[in-house]
Image (cartoon, rainbow, N blue to C red):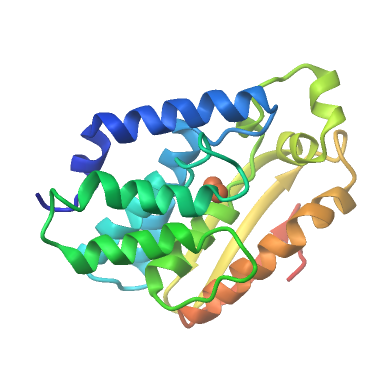
Length: 222
Ligand SMILES: [Fe+2]
Ligand SMILES: [Fe+2]
């Protein structure tokens, strides 16, 4: 079997892992980590991979890593990146002869979450940019005012009404542009939980030979 995004999306086990992850994180009042997030991160990872000039094969790997990166959450939040990586291996190791692709995808998935991670391949860098940039109102599932206000992640996600990521091959700048409605959260809340993620994006952009720019409400902040 070729490791293609279409084949991975058709796999019943992967589908069930994502469904169960969705249920588990809903129960924890977390922002969306299910099909919406998986789809957006997968699409965005492919877009970034294409723009920075990766091969068609590696664009496909980036899309797969994006689709599967959070599917380990149903086994446990703390190590979800490692669970997802091992699950990916269990499902596909007997089905494909593309060992290099299998391992590259596993590594990117395993690498997407923790500060101790080190970038050693481009797919990891692409996945981090796609994942950490997904902040948006649509990620908040429980839209009652009480639930939004009680959790900083929900407040910050809910306040973001627009999110665009631009990769400029000529200027070598990757720009994340956010429209933030400060009615729901002060801009400081954003920095409280997103400074680490934005640093991660900056490092990933640099690994790909790009600069990272953050623009919130037309103000250039990074
Ligand atoms: Fe994650
Ligand atoms: Fe994620």
